[in-house]
Length: 154
Image 1 (spheres, rainbow, N blue to C red):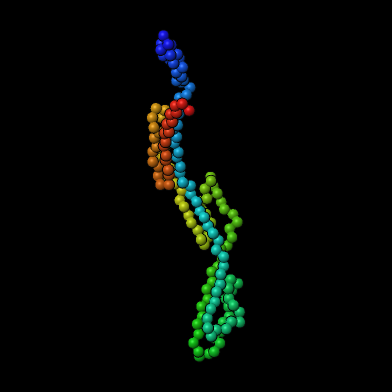
Image 2: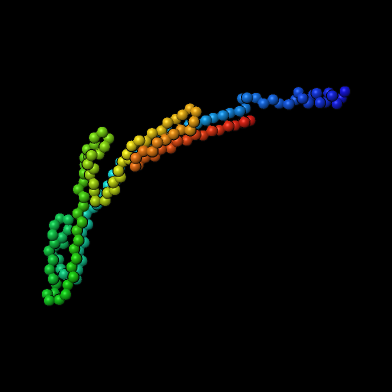
């Protein structure tokens, strides 16, 4: 009788599984990107340099105008070098139409990036399957993702 009671009592102490301890998540996402146009432009400042030997100057040239130079010892060898880089004029206005710069002002040091072409770029979420994406033109990105999480006994 004691063995029967011991087996019978252990059956009642088993913990049943509760449905609230099972979690299931399905997350679908689609990300579509079209690269925007960009212009990066940096103004260049003015610079002037002059060098030489057997040369004298009564007025150096530069941004303001030409210089006045003469040979120091007539009949002797001489060297002379002069260079001028004018600065970019400052642009104070830029016309924008519908979010686009039609004619960007470019300075001496500029980088231009073309905008992407949407083309046939598309993405679809499907409640019963994996998301689908369709490639677009140059400068586009399409990413479709499905994440599935199943947790038991959290």
